[in-house]
Every structure is written in structure tokens, then in C-alpha cells.
Image (tube, rainbow, N blue to C red; front, side):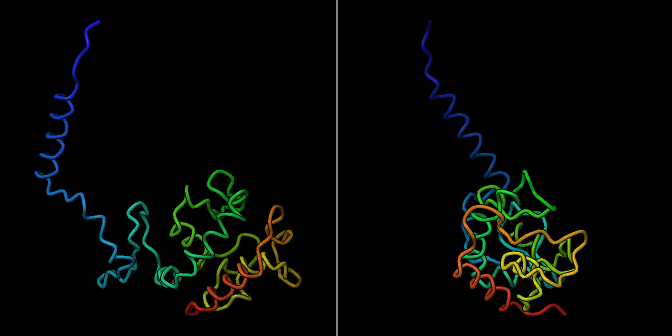
Length: 183
């Protein structure tokens, strides 16, 4: 068997790729700008986040919820850890995807929560400015009495595993309360 040196082929491939990037005006470092966490397209009135893998822009209410910071630092990790076993991309019970964050982006999870109606109750999953009217919080707290559910409300969440801590519940409540109420 004859040994071959592949370095020249790799060097040619690297040169070709760099030449193509230069010809196309590609800037490999363009995605490193952290100054674009969220932006507003004034003409379209849409707010978008800087995550290029997310095809749909965030609504103004969703973008505000993201900017509040608590979502990414506290609420998102809690949802991913406590809820994604049943509400993950593979087994999205009731069509609700709440993680895990290594498979679903935070902005995708946010889009599925803020301003979206719950499947089993006539409530928003997250009602901006009103934690007591937010189905997500109601289910976690277990305050289901008097809620007009379509075919049953089920039990408090999460049904198994480690429950949501008081600190996590407080962070969720404060995050929802800090949002501007829906018009």
C-alpha cells in the first residue's frame, strides 16, 4: 500500500473556500457582533431577535419578554429542566414545547408561550402583566379550581420529578408581571 500525503489537497481546499468567501463578500466574523440582541424593523413594525436559526420574528410582546432577562437566566432553565420531558420536541404534549434548550432555542420556546392560548383552557399560556391569568403559572401552582377547562384541567405541573422551587416560581411570577399587559 502506498502512503499519500493529503496536505496539498487540504491546502487547495482551504484556498478555494477562502477565495469563494472573498468573492461572495463573506465576513466570517460578522456573526460575532453581540450588539444586536434585538432590533426593530421600523418599516415592518416587527421585532426580531439575533438568533439566525429562528425563521420567525418575535412579536413586540415576545421581544419585550426576552429583553427582561429573567426569562433566559431563570425561567428558561427551569422550563427546560422541569418540563421538557413531556413538553419537548419529540413528545410535545398538547403541542407545547418547553425545551430542552440544547434542542430548542429560547426564542422558539418564548414564541410558543407569550400571547398563545392554552389548548385546554380559555387562557393565554403567558398573559403579559398578569401572572394570575397565565395558564403556565396556574398549572405550576395547581390553582385549577374554577378554571373552565375543555375536558378537564389535569393536575398541577410538573406531574413527576423535582417540583418547581419557590425561587423559580417567584422568578416566573415576576417575569410575567414585569411585561406590559396586552392591549
